[in-house]
Image (cartoon, rainbow, N blue to C red; front, side, top):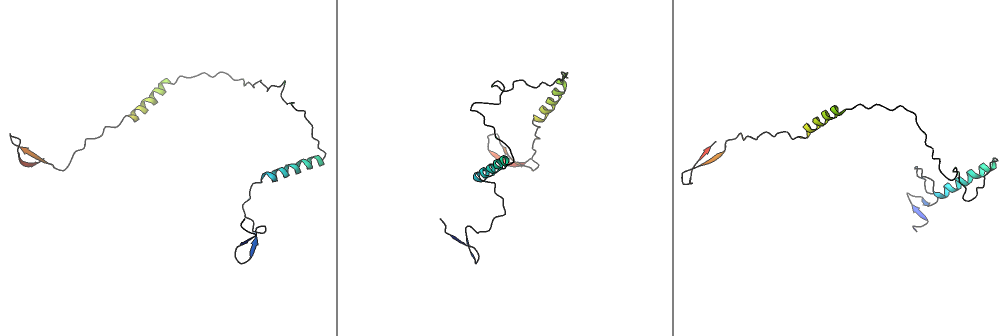
Length: 128
């Protein structure tokens, strides 16, 4: 354990009388249990009563969940075929997917080229 005293500033403080933080912490389990016990005691003090239910009893009808599902009466909707619109959209998508042709890079600066004779020997440089 750290000790009984924590020295902050000039005045020694014990762990019990240290300043409270401004943050509100959620209640712990013990505090929740106490609050529930207090609520039950207040309910019983106002004249409320608690029914004892036998083990194995449920609120289910015949031991099953309610299996009737609510039905919504609505007219069947007519469907409109949109195949031509879908094809147009797909065509536009495909056009976007195709890579654009890259322009051929042209070197704007002149380059040196060797000029060879009939025997493959270099003769001179030529700018082209």
